[in-house]
Length: 153
Image 1: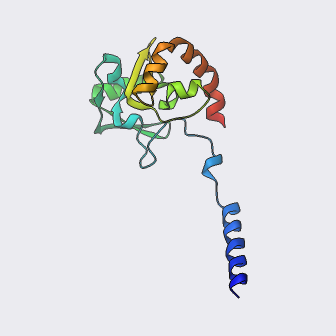
Image 2: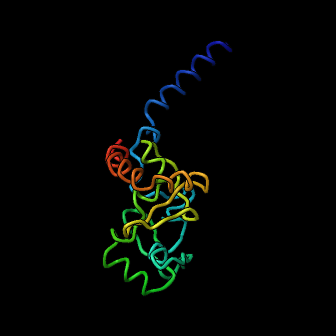
Image 3: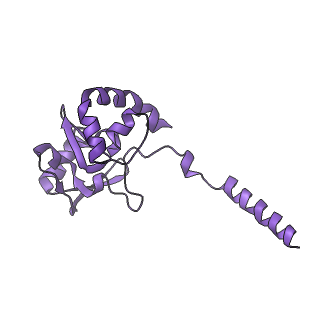
């Protein structure tokens, strides 16, 4: 009887795994957000990075773009973002620029950022940021080539 229950349990577990969606096989989100929420750039105002003084966004100045919630420090920054979101959104959807250059996806952290040629980049941590900074232009070229394939997988 116990052996029969084990077989039934294994069969039903296997069937449920086959019938349920497998998120590991799903394409990554175009914008990196925390798994607990749907907030882009960890709630930082992406427009404020371009002034060199990143600011946390506020709930009252939020908008939805590319399926994620974006927060801004002021109405003026929100309005500026809405006029041309592509100009202000972090490259590679906010994923780590160094990892994308290596053909992988890793969480980007707004604490480790750079603006290069008018584009905003995030990296995973300070150590990765230092690596990325040493060959920034080369890593950007590689990441630009690899990003379309990474996001389409």
